[in-house]
Each structure stands twice: as C-alpha cells, then as structure tokens.
Length: 117
Image 1 (cartoon, rainbow, N blue to C red):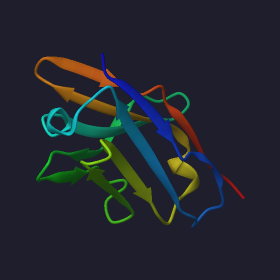
Image 2: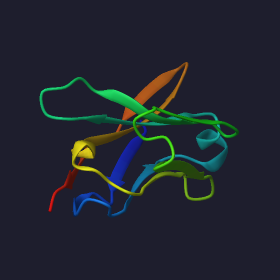
Image 3: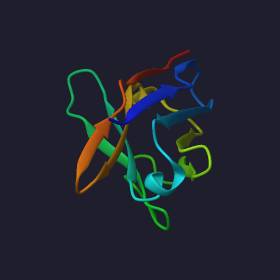
C-alpha cells in the first residue's frame, strides 16, 4: 500500500511563500511514473477543491492559484511539490496530496497552511 507523507505547511504572512512536499514510500520510481499527482485543499466550511494537477508531462491549475502556485515532481525522490508564492489569507486551508491511477487511489493525511498577519 502506498504511504504518502506531507510536509512544509505552517503559518506565513500574506505575500509570503511556502513549499509543500508529498513523498511516497514503498514505491519504486517506475511505479511513481504511472501515477497522476494532485494537490487539493479544504478551507473551513468549504468543500475540498482540486488546485493543481500533474502527470509526468502535463500540469494544470485552478484559476484561484494560477500564476502563484507551481506543482512539480521529482521522480527520483518519488515526491510531488507545491510551491506557493504570494500567499493570501484565502489560501488558508488543509492541503492534501493525492496519487492515483486506475487501480488505486491514495491520499496524504493533510497539512495545515495558515496565512495571517
């Protein structure tokens, strides 16, 4: 079973940056390449939303984060990153990574990101 470990969250002031990481354990690199990797977030009182999507050759973003957030993958480390710049209070949420393919669907435990002065 795939285990995903998220890191990099925390408290930052508006306009600041954070980089989230989500590393897969118990996985070889060739297997990692078969997964699509996404980042979601869930703000208090709101539904979970997809904000960034990456395959081995393609990325897409929600309009709310486009131009500020960048998703990337390090295949050798079996890790997906989310670089978040110019953060706003409305970016405050729990952030989740997701690795999935037709045969299985795996989520990280979630990590808190708080934007506040």
